[in-house]
Image 1 (tube, rainbow, N blue to C red):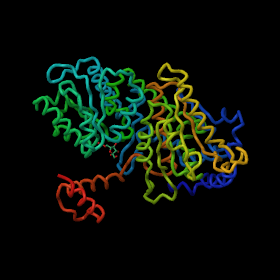
Image 2 (image 1 turned 90 degrees about the horizontal axis):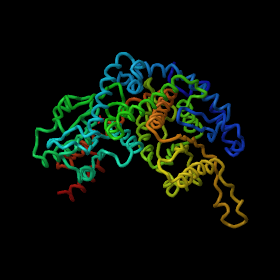
Image 3 (image 1 turned 90 degrees about the vertical axis):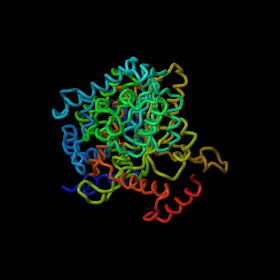
Length: 529
Ligand code: F6P
């Protein structure tokens, strides 16, 4: 069967339903109390409200039919059982196994996952309890996580969301190529009390290696010790030889596996810095929360399946209602990193234009995902959301229970979240402000679809569930679109060109560079030392 989604009966049905839908307004649904009950659902600590989606029961039924016609349920079984769901690299994608209990993992990986998780938790507790002595015998109390993309975004989000402040460990993240970031990250750290974790699946990512070399030089220049890498450096990698060549001995290395994608790797040894920050018990709660969502995804009928519906409504908005972008709007400072994490998870997974069958996609795939920390966004880009000409969809993410004791402040935060969802749904008709000349300028059209995701509280379990929900949303959409969410061939060209330009900036030839790049290199070289 072709992987083309747009030839399926359900896809065609959705196309005709979209024609009807654009003639209705969400306001028409707003007054129906039964709608919230029928279009919201609970998945563990998450309440997910789809009732502000531009869809009636017929649309939902056709979306579920599309999932079935795309054989989503079979694909999910293949995912969990270690099937080759990443065909361009000939690999399974077993991030679900990494967070599963021993007896729910595929036997081929069960023991290795157990052993590695045990090492992660043991190192975390040693560092937290002051039992990791540095070169001078003083216990390490400062940790620098060096990594980028999937080796950075998930851990930083989880630490930001879950760490109890003041944290017993001074934990910092160093990701991008900007040397200023490296200088700032190490400013004020005591090399004799600092542990550097180099997280890199390939151990050949330019930014990460540059930052790792910066860390190594910083340490050696300040301690004078070239023989103490084993006390102050750990590697999390699928390339042990490269890590050893860098100076990190095998005993200081934790494995990453090629059957876990980088952007799906928080649950693995990439999460070591998270375990150090929040402790072994809470790290295991994070894993358990994600595993509970796995069980929901695999065991719940599609009509009430949270990740499947989140993915299907995304397809409805993007492929049928013309939404070009998708906003993730977290109404909690602890989730400020969620949009950035989801940009990689969704856009690096599903930003594809060639289907698994090798043909060019005839449908749009992932939309541009963006977002910002709310309510700051209300004073930055919500004007466009309310009165702009662009079509978009949005997730509003909030936490019912505050992470502090300022109850009234939290009520205001939630009031803004729910109020914005209401305004995006209902709008405000022009002219209702009286005859004045600017009445047309006051009109707010509304009819903007949103999903509200409400966490009971922000805990390791609820964060695990939330992130696993989005992972499975991505898988749902990839299955319908017929694309591979687990490779990322598109990033290779940029990496190669960066190396070419780096050589030219350092005085090498500009031959082979396009004219604009050569001209810009010449300008930079004019000013550079
Ligand atoms: O962005 C490309 C990418 O390969 C991501 O998929 C990955 O998470 C990131 O770079 C870092 O890769 P590595 O963990 O190999 O350093």
